[in-house]
Image (tube, rainbow, N blue to C red; front, side):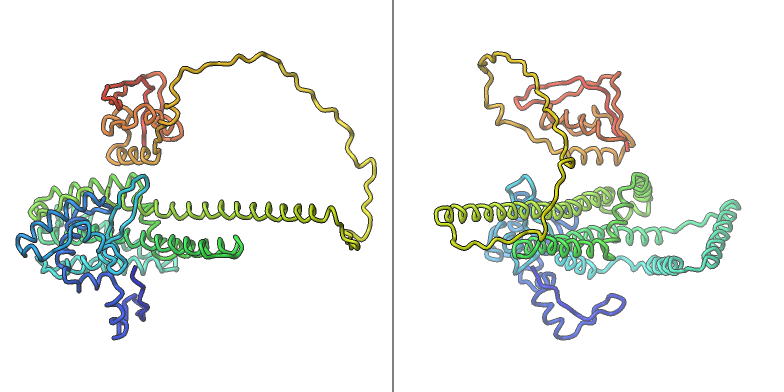
Length: 494
């Protein structure tokens, strides 16, 4: 991975770049290397098509190889067969190498196939190239209003005088009353088509950029996870010291400005009311004629679902960090117990060697300088133990006629995935029955998966189980036979 270049920072966050910083940045930054690469146009065009345009986070190697093969075949017909000599998989391996750093190659849980995702420097480079294209018009008014509104929020949020805050709220109330009076008198102020398009383009650009923010936050936690693994491997001190260091660094990232902003954004996004409000406003905006004339990207209609998927992946990265700490504690405890057993065994071996030839002079130290007195009345009275009664029965040897192969064909059901299915279904519905949920997402593991759904419903305080009403659930077994089961009526709600 690329090293971070330390450059002077302006108080507003902008870098004060000088010659040495830029020279080092050109060698170490993956985005700069991408822009300066010989095949940079092909790489940028392909990565933009595969990841950025469809808002895709993770792609399997087989799927990505098929798409890249089509792109290379088309380019070789235009540029010549020798223009791109490598095959698709070789290019993917090259782009994910440390000296490139344009893709992140990793393995997801439960799969032995490599998967790929964009790195934050690569996405920044692609976004920068997109900004070079000449836009239809520059939305100066909407940007100015955004700056003005942000300044208003900063001034209002930093004001500590209650009287000033109340005066500002009274002024806002008066402006709202005047606006209501104008509407009642028939003066309904509406945005013209130009202003509607301008604000929609700015909204779309900001919405797509949020996925890049998720990649950056996830990359920060992934770097922390890598540092934790390296420190655990090399650390030779006490367990308390390394844990204090690790938890301190984790709290530093969680309590940073970016960490707090991510938590606030995630809490806002997970609110069902906010999701419904966002979906309703988005559908209404996309149905406006001026917006339809722009031919917006269809992926904008499900942009909030992409945010949820990206946020879940970031949360899984944080969960893997916690799992690594738990494994570290288990390993350290096992090593300490083994060390104690080695010491005891060493003492016993020395005692056996000295049994035949004890030392002539043996200096024995006293643990205490005075004898300890224990009075007889301090001892507890004798209590006879209770004798258990055991019924003796003659055990007959049984003979099992069951195939033992069933013990090795157990099925694992991922309850986290089932809960994710329920959450996605509740994004568009306030409640959904188990029968309808299985109709939308058929059972893949049969009866075991159905039982897991019932267990989740029993643990969920928002779910309702009606024993008086029965539902019929259908699924297809592994042998292709259609099966069904009669279960109580289960309804999942937000």
